[in-house]
Image (cartoon, rainbow, N blue to C red; front, side, top):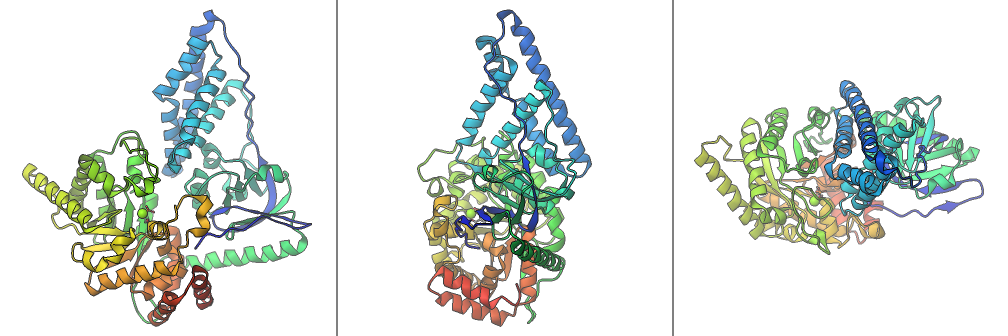
Length: 588
Ligand code: PEP
Ligand code: MG
């Protein structure tokens, strides 16, 4: 849904704060103010003759921290949580980082600093560097550094910490930020909701809150100063509001709302395993968006018609080295085997803009979203592009893989990419390596220019998928990441629906597959209109599947067409939203 601004509102009894609801739900409970102990580190030096001993003390400290990380990792792996175990594997890599350790050793040897001072100086320096990154995912690694730093102090000073794994009653956790080791061992049965001052949609806290289904409101400005330990609060992680010191009428109102929401979630979940067919018998395909071939991601295979978007770039972000052809081949093959005859759309590397990888030099640009991004960057780095295509073509023999190009702006882009794919096929044939020659090749429709000429483009490709996240950014000229212009990012702008309708008509007329795989594909209000515009294939994260299937089961194609016709005629995004909401109120 289109983001809105809600100002903080004051009334005599109750304060209202605004946050980002990253994991939906409603909770009422007492605050547990979580302030992890971080010892004060004052500048402390050592004697010249204690240097060797101090360096050894540091490495002993580091070994102890590594042992702790290993034990957490093993616990998580044996309790079937490999994704969380990975967080600690990444922390171990940071702990052993050559540059960081050389920095610490140098401060001890040259500046005669104590181990804790050397750690503090070095970790702060690296945290500053990471926090300046334009890439949100890299910025969020600062939390891992802080986590490690705290662990090192805790071992060094032998201090206890507040323990979120053994709470004695149900609470709403309010914290500046939660570190990965806080969230990984959290006692989920006692946590009613999580509220933090920092953290975005892709932060550890958000990911873990969603997977545990704990309501979470992140980015609530200075909430630690405004709220007291033990105070009762209402967390509405549906609308993104927090109410402190609620009066009895508020408690009653939200108590009802909470039960209604729980009932709603229970009811919606029943749709997860159902066939997505409209009342008048039209089968709509529901596909999955994934970022890896991990078991947790592939679990959605049980309920979906295929993978509508595999964001392969995440594989390139997990370490300093680029994934090899063999590594990629194994991942793609796993996805292909899992889905069998059902299609798995692999999007080629879409890096640049907001996403960076260590292994590829991406130029610093004033307008990175308009610069070297996606396909353009692949053209600049043909060997990286070719390696990926080789892996895809080889893995395609094991299932039904499709190849999709991101950030396509013109026919030239498509023809250039096709020539490269042809080259790769020739190379594989020459080398006598087995591959599938007829892998469908398609494009993301996310640059408006390509949507406008969809009727021309359709002759050049096998399929297309509409990336509404970027399409909205480029169509409305609003940076999708800039919080200052959030209210201008109008994904329900009538222009979006007109353009999507135009592209859908062009592909339908040619009998070629067209889907929507941006966030709007998983939003019931938008999806209803897309179906009316001729889209028969929607792709989304697993958590959106039940709601979309519920929509489909309660919709007729004629109603969807009426909706679409009216939306195309609306004048503003607000009109569009109000109208759809009214029309779908009996379903949602
Ligand atoms: C999109 O732009 O809508 C999309 C699906 O791709 P991403 O969000 O990865 O840019
Ligand atoms: Mg995109």
